[in-house]
Amino acid sequence: MYNIFMGITVLLMLLIIPIAIFVGGLPAIFIIFVILFLIFLQGRKMQMSYKRADIIGKLISAKKYSEAIAIGESTTYRTEIEKMNLLAAYFHAGEKEKAILLATSLKTSIFMPSQANNAIRDWKKKIETK
Image (cartoon, rainbow, N blue to C red; front, side):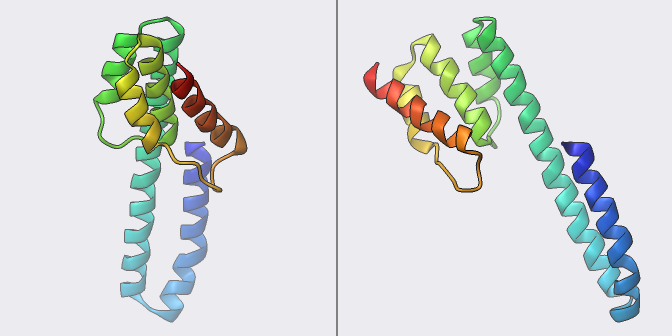
């Protein structure tokens, strides 16, 4: 995923730089590089987030809930996938209050796959019934 993202970024750079030189000169090139660098940083942040989510999921599978919770709580920036994995760790560890708080922060979105939206709804139902 990350390699595809970087490939697209490089292709955009190769396409936009000649146009920027012709139209706007050096200031336009500088602005383009700043924007592409910010896109690169965001992609890197998302890649690390997915790695953390994968680690949390593996710890939950191994029934090491306290370690999964420690890793999940160690970061301030969490994607919905990380939140769902942390929610699963709370749920299996029996920490219902934290699970309820985290479930209320999960949001469905039209930009997310339908499986993710369905999983969020399922977790909210599980917590309410437990």
